[in-house]
Every structure is written in structure tokens, then in C-alpha cells.
Amino acid sequence: MTPSFRPPVSKESARLRLYMLGLVLDMWAMLISFVLANWLVLGSPWGEPGKPHGIAFFTILAPVYALLAVNSGAYGIRMLGRIRTSSAHALLALAQAVLVTLLFVFFAKIAEQLSRLTFVAGCLFSAVGLIGTRYIVTALSRRMLGAVPMMELIIMDGVSVPGLPAHMAVVDARVAGIDPSSHDAEMAERLANAVGGAEHVIVACSGDRIEDWSIALKSLSARGEILIPEMARFAPVRGGTFQHRPTLIVAGGPLDFRDRIIKRIFDVVASSVALLLLSPVLIAAAIAVKLSSPGPVFFRQARLGRDARPFKIYKFRSMRVEDSDQRADKLTQRDDPRVTRVGAFIRRTSVDELPQLFNVLTGDMSMVGPRPHAPGARAADALYWEVDQRYWARHCIKPGITGLAQIRGYRGSTDAHEDLILRLQSDLEYVTGWSVLRDIRILASTVRVLIHDKAY
Image 1 (cartoon, helix red, strand yellow):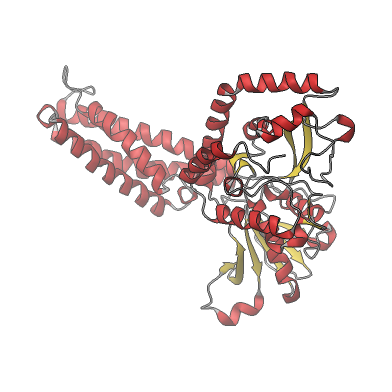
Image 2 (cartoon, rainbow, N blue to C red):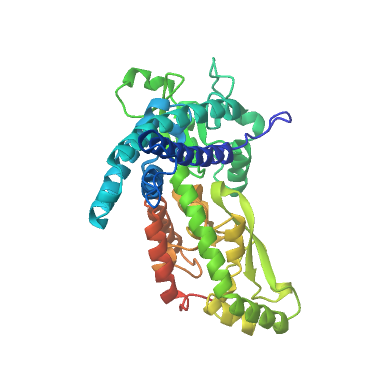
């Protein structure tokens, strides 16, 4: 990597602040609208004594609107610059919320106590206010994020692309030492570091490098495209475009921004509750490990996380310090002499994995996802990525404490290539079919496989 190049910083946190600001402004716009409707129709901003009218409508309408708007994507990236599209989604959510509110008023039999004209006026004012909010958020977005609300980066591998926009970060693959044909952990980490916080990565390369780059880009959580000038004569072919040039989309990132927020909220809540409920088990295990043999309570080891970036995973130490395998060159076997008696018990009951709840809180892991592997882990005589070229695609999402492979019984040592392939197929199935309900089902199913004959 060139000394002057700095990996781009993600704009996700700034976008999240803008989305939250947009939601708050929408709530204020609706409240002011119904207060104004009260004042124009009833002569008082707060309605009549005992009959708040507009305020009552707002209390029912606002939370319903917020739920529907968030679900429809009204607070997504389209809110930042696409005023018409964003306004259309907001107005659709408002119309749906109005219908829900009317049903509530009808079934609650309180229609006679409320002013219909106030409701109509408040809804019309709210529509105007929601559109006005989009203009404010768009203006702030352009000031905070520039013309493009997401961070884009292009990697040039022997092919130059003229006329790049000023906001575009550029990496020369050869100067940065990135060779996609080297499908190993070191190269995956180098690529991740070069990409940084970019959410859209385009590669310009020669035709003979397309397959290698296709494999490399799948390890990223960013959307990955390969620029193919030769595709210009096949304009009807489905693909993407960059600067009006055809591209081949080889990686889309499994979760959009909204899904990542939902998954992160779920992880924080679930891990916090689990830490609280399991604190007696954590304390007892820590004491037992400390008394079992000299050394620290926790074992920290480098594992490959999202984008194949290494992180330190936490586990209760189950081996003697002098026998600990930091590189995971030798996976644990049944009746492994390196494991202490306490270590054997906590491994068999999966208690040794509980400290990973702290990894979830810090954001390195998720409650559910593909299990993180050590760079030196092997299936039989081959490194994992040497067994199946699809291996890197599982790193486009955060690793998890448990996952689809675990509840299907695919755990323990990988003595044969098939052991890894079975896990990989489950991991890729999870990556391409994520939902928060599926995470809940996997967590619930994990309870029945905590004690397993392959957990050693």
C-alpha cells in the first residue's frame, strides 16, 4: 500500500445519525401539524378540555407511522438525496398509518369524541411536514457526506480507468501488494485493510484475473463489482454500471444497512441478557479454570472475522498454558492430553465459549453466524481455503457464537475435507438467507446441542 494512501472511512455512522435525525424531525413535524390543526379548527393548540383531539390523533398515529416507515425503508439511503423517492415512501407509510388509526378509532368506539376536521387537517399538514423534512436531511447529507452518501473505492489491477469522480478512493493493487490469486489469510487481510470502510468496491482488471478477483471480493461485506469493458457490446446482459461502463456484480454483501442495524441491536440485547442470566456460570467457570492449572482464566486467539479481518476471540482456557495452541495448527482431538480435566468438562458442555458474549458486545462477533476459524486451521492436510474456493464467501458477515452448521451437528475436528465442506455449505446457506427470525430459531435450537459428542 502506498504510504500516502489511507483506507477510506465508512460513512455508515454518519448516515445512521442522519436517519435518526430524520425520524426525530418527522415526529416533530407531525406533532406540530396536529397542534396547528387544533389551533385552526378548535381555536386552541391543545384542543378542548378533556378532548385533546389532534394530540390524541398524534399519539396513535406517530408510533404506527414510525414502525411502517422504518420497515418500508423510508429511513434508508434513498432518504439522502432522492427527495421524491424518499417522500413517496414516507407518504405511503403515512397513508397506511392513517388507515390503521381509523380502524383503531372505529373499534375503540371513540369517533364521536374526536374532531374529524382536525384529523384531516393534521394529516395534510403532516404530509407537507414529512416532505419538508426530506429537504432538510438531504441538505445536511450533502454537507456531511458530500455528493455520494456511501464510500466508494476502485482497485486498479493493471487496468486504468480515466475520468474517475473526485470522491473516489483509488488503490493500485500492485503497489498495495494485493494479489487475488493468493487465496490465503494474509492476502485477505491485506485486501480488507486496503478497502477499509468502503461499502462499494469496483475492480478494474484484465480478463484472466476476473475469476481470482471474484473469489477475493466475496470475502468482503461490501458490494463488489468487476469492471469489464468487453461487456459494453452486451448491454442487455444483467449486471451493474460504473461511470456508464458495464460491470459484473460478483458480491452484493448479504445484509443491507437496515438489516445490519437490526442484527446489531438484536446482538447487543441478546448478549447483555445472556451475560446477566449466565453470570453465576461465568463466575463458577472462571474459578474452576483458575484452580485447575496455573495460568490466565481466558484464552485469546486470533480468528478471522468479517471481511477476513483478524480479531482476538475470548474463551475460557481449557488447556495447560505450555500446551496452548495459539495458531490452531493442531485441532483438539478426543481425549486430547493437552486439555485439563476442567477444560474437558467446559468444552463438552460448551461453557468454554461463553466469554465470546463479550466479543459480541464489542462488535467483533454476532450471536449467530459462521463460526470463526483460526488462520492456521486445517481440514486433513489442507488449509481451509485450499479445500474449497467458496471458503472466503463466509467472511462477508460477522462470525457467530453459534450457527446453522452447529445446530446441524457439524462441529468438532475436521479430519477430512468433507467435514469442512458440510460446514461451509451451511454457512453459505445462512449468509444468503438471513433474517432475525432465523437467528432466534437458531439460538433456540442451540440449547439442545450444547452438550454434544463432538464437543471436545
